[in-house]
Length: 467
Image 1 (cartoon, rainbow, N blue to C red):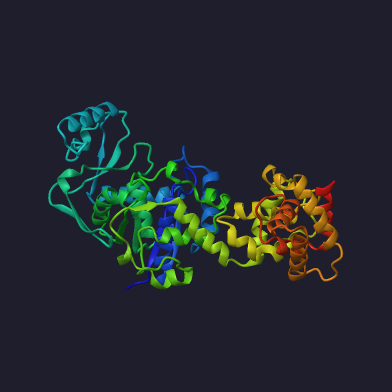
Image 2: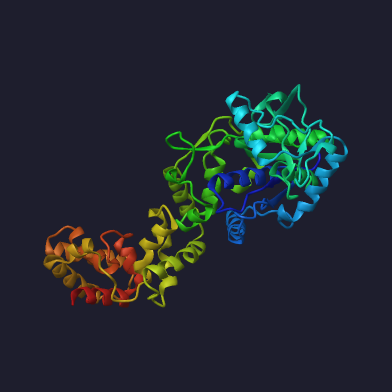
């Protein structure tokens, strides 16, 4: 097999949709698996809807996911002269023709065709007419002279063989009257010129593929291998939409998902390798083949993504997690961060990451370590600091101040000693300590928290609560 070349070709009319991210991932993995190239083409021919901001968002999302492309990204709009050249080449070879129909005539044709239940919305009026019949003052379009009988077939790497009768398709426009190319022509020319060997995309493009094959055939160009993936659905089986969590990739980043978790989850939507659920990037590259992509639609489930994300957070490097949460912690604390924040977060991360499903939640749980005094006490935590709680806190504070060796075991022994002397359960000591030191009713083990905060900070926070 010649060198594999795949591509991802998004339209820059908005964010990179989660379904588009999966398409990019599958193309990237297939190219990597075969030691080939993965190219990025921005399909920006729709100048009214394409924006620089959307292009930047696509680049940013792809880089965040780690889906690096080979060479510079292509702009379809910048290749418009080449598209026009090919349209005229088809005209000269007799595989295309000028059509001079007015908008009113075309509207009438479409209405008549629909009324008759026909899918051929253009009736071929100018297919065989003499150009000398052309009306004055009308700029023509260029249409493909498509085969009128026989069949067009796709030997699809996912959908298997799919065939359509040619009489169901009309002569599509290749070049508009203003000289701009249509999507159908531009895609074929770009894929050919870029040397694309495999077109891996959603099955919503299947109908387009039949038309594009006709252009390939008219030009005498070799077909790429087509592979049409079923689209993503929501957990209710309906087409994926925003109500199912179908947001842009950057939104998932901002919601605290890790790129490796999102990639792993998207990989498993429609592709499988035995019963494996946790699949590293290295394994994915080693194992990825098109024949493992299912023919049925996959359901996007935000809860499953969250569960997978918690696994990857638990496995992530401490330094990386601290770097990720510091900006979020700064926001939560309005920038009022202690000098020792990074050190405390680093020491406390092993326990913190066990409890978090995303980076935002991790930052929220960790913020008390980074806060300057006096820390904010939540209403629920404040209930532990009622009269009885404060009395226990004062007794514990007095004993803790006597400690020389400030470590988990020693702190634990002192707390238990106070509880025994007061004839109460350990929780009666631990909960007021937790509230005063973390500002919350829930935290990692409170003796670990005290060890990480250090003696001076612990006693100072207790004094704040006792005021």
